[in-house]
Image (cartoon, rainbow, N blue to C red):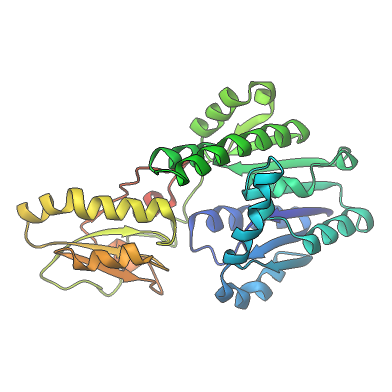
Length: 323
């Protein structure tokens, strides 16, 4: 088997949120064909316990910790370097040194990066003879542009700038890579329009769902009271798009459902709810459940699963899982 370097912006395990589900399954696929050297970050201290489990798929795992508060401060350097702030956020000298070492001493000729920000580690001309494949997943620059439409100054200006500068980086990185993949045909078509000079390198592969794990045949204890009509939203609740979705739904839509069906109750299920999400407990018929050990009972016994995202890119795993 050949060696392959796989760079991911977040530890691809456990597969308990959208980006980690896709990156984990990509890792499993690659590990069946290559000896994988994985370089990645951890931004949640609880994920440290899972590093050892990745060794069953990897020849070597190199992990760097990210402390979000400090990295946000470090990312400000992008303002003075005409860079997207996302780039210094994910820039790490130790990871860069490890990458150089692997590419110099371990006969690695193939590289796969997951998330456009990781392209900075292998974009230099000295790596032009490598086979470099990028999974951008979503057009992240467009996500920031969308965010700017929902914000007021100064965040409006900052997010608009981030979208512009990140797109510039995405286009430059794509020009250096052999192929760039996205999560859907729509995302790939969008990037082709935004970066017509690399249109011939752009393709996509869809997300999937483990139909055995999410089999509707399985029987689970009902987590809901017997006298309610449960409506559920699932997702990481520290993600801005998810938090925005449940706040809008709970306040603009659910009251109309509740008035028509008093038994209806809206359950928000997902780890790390923000303070704004926790405040929704004050709304009539809304329950913020938080993190759960297994999402399947909450999907299996819900009457409806909703995904009222107003700002989102690509394919939503929560929709596939609910289906």
